Image 1 (spheres, rainbow over the protein chains, first blue to last red):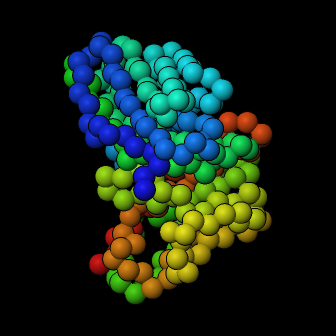
Image 2: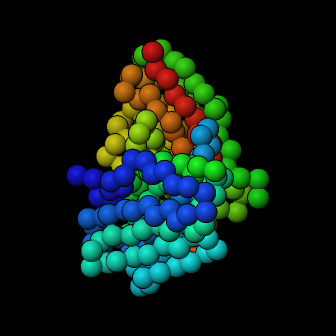
Length: 114
Length: 115
């Protein structure tokens, strides 16, 4: 049973438009949610996070929204840039001391076309 | 901050052989994690250390797998009697546990191919 699901394996958007990546989870014990970005031949890099006590967190062009009742979170990238093309992983953690032991989704490959 | 370093980057081995991977975390990080990633999937948690203590192991980690972190610095992951199903990217990550949200810093991984 996959506890974190990213139902869209891929997403293609035009440069300058909004990218919306979605993630659903099933485990009510998850308290922290993170997004990682991965380029080919590199490890994932942390992008943005949100605690379950919030419903929105913003960092520059990146905003994460959390809907606890729906067990759903989304990552918005505005405006999208070609350099944002990568695989995006949603991750969730119930580790109250941090977010290290995380459960990852299978990723969404974002392509931003110039 | 020189980042998390993993060696080797690639390893090809024959079924039944033993392999060992090394991870050097960010120096001030007290937590070290091992994850495994197969094609088309996200990273899967294997085990983690706080300093030199191995605090948790996933049931994915069979008894052919062993990890160590002597002196709380670098870590090694050994796979004995490798099987073709062990072929994957093995990712190491580190973090600084400080009682609040602390994301993982990943290395670039070791890609294992078992023939």
